[in-house]
Image (cartoon, rainbow, N blue to C red; front, side, top):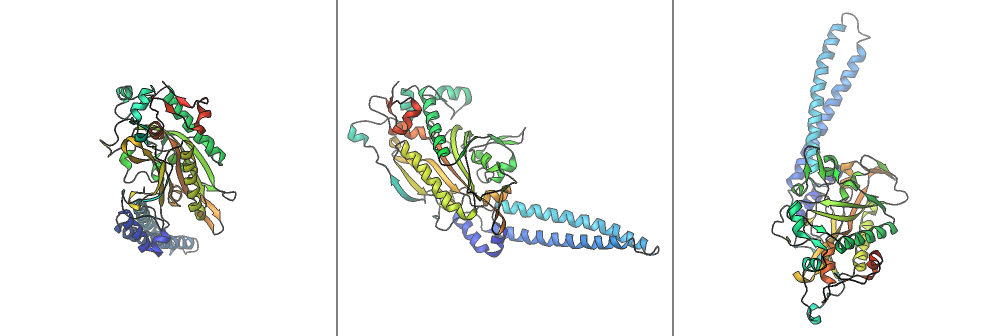
Length: 421
């Protein structure tokens, strides 16, 4: 949620952000109109209630002749107060609904445009020359099945399309990757947490996931709960309605959880293997920090993600995501995309978003700053996820069907340098 003072004082700034995202500028006007209606109806209610209180104080001092008239007026006024209070509540609800439709303010410098208008900030690592080696690379599923590491057929039999079993070394490889991520997170001051994967509507909505992409979320109507697609949601809700002490620096958490996504709108896209699946595991970084420290914290998150990619020895690039491809809560997002040899393209494996104070305002998470009580900022970033196995299987496959294990990961796999069936 954007600070209403910003919208009142600089509506053109907010409209420019909406334009950059491809969102409706008119939503800003709706908010301003709703704000005016809310304030005027609240003022009318409070004025009449004050008058009612003044009138009530005169009853005891009134003469017997005056008292019936005053009581009759007090009764009538009481009904008027109730009517105005109802109108004020209705106006407040309309204002809240209008505010919830506005997306976060895009940070200056974010590229304009849609999904294909990102800016490549850098490319890191050398792309392997399979042709020069005389090797025809197999896709990740063929490599994994050759190692007896995955079973897609039985996953579909049990649960349907886009479900799978990781087994044997496949399960071990995922566990090793996530454990290495958890160790790195703890070494950098994050508190490791396993999080709930079912959350209440106010938490899901508070993080901004019930907007344009709500159809990607699994909902359990009998329980009025949502399955999370990232532990970011549960971590953001951890301090809901709290006042934090950030005098010693940001509060950082690393959430290890299973994640669930419908993958709505991706029919026919990346259906082979485990690139786009309905269930996967992830270690997610999350930080509550002072608003003025958010951009620096965001840069740290990106550096930690790149540190993990270096550990698994993957060639990758970093992109600055265009405004029209940001989630509603993100003011800026950097994606790291690993090279996928068999598709001759880069594939997103991790991202980090600066949500500024947008989520915290919705969830009422504040800190006592120099200027008094103020909303905190929230930063999120993925440190490792099941999808990383796709890039690792393809980039590290060997001509004999074995799989090279990066040096940093070997201690988590009993010291093995290669995996063979």
